[in-house]
Image 1 (spheres, rainbow, N blue to C red):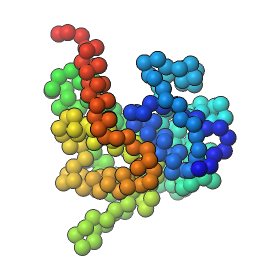
Image 2: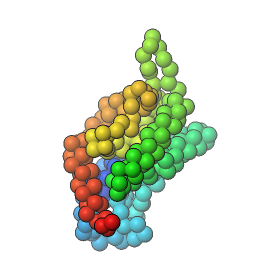
Image 3: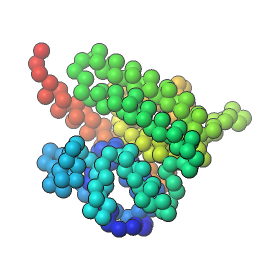
Image 4: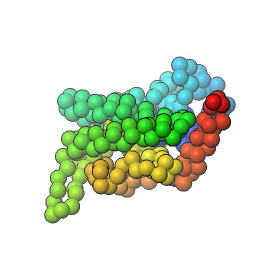
Length: 241
């Protein structure tokens, strides 16, 4: 792997947002130092590098910090334009479409999904899951628009959000794959369903076959354990009725 200056990634193994950054660094072929953070006892480096939100991931390039996974992806694409494939398309309209679906993914799928583990009642959890599944249904249309998929002899053939190869939205959603699978185990509900969202289901299989995904994605079983531990912590912190 190659690099241009010193690269360091502050992260936590279970974070899907850290995984997003790892995927991009891997696909670009960039070497970097990974620093595992204990979020219950945050390091001075993390606190000084991300003083606003104090969370991971943080990419430090030549002592300069870049925060937030989507911003990190754009920074990597621009700062290391000569390394590996481009993450964002060259065409301005295609870039706008990719950014639209990236914003939709964060606002409509990731935001309610994160609330799932903080829900206090079954009714709240059911509503959050409904919103998450509805967002996945709409994202199915986005994948159809971006990938140029087609049917041949009854078989679904498709690409990625980046077209024939992975791109910006693929990494943002791809970093969530282990957590999406773990959420289905914990909740018993399918977020990406082969019947309701066949394009996304096929996309997930293709994405998981990528070398970068094989190297970076977390073990689903370990994520299930972490998800259940998160639920326990929020339940314990919730005030009694």
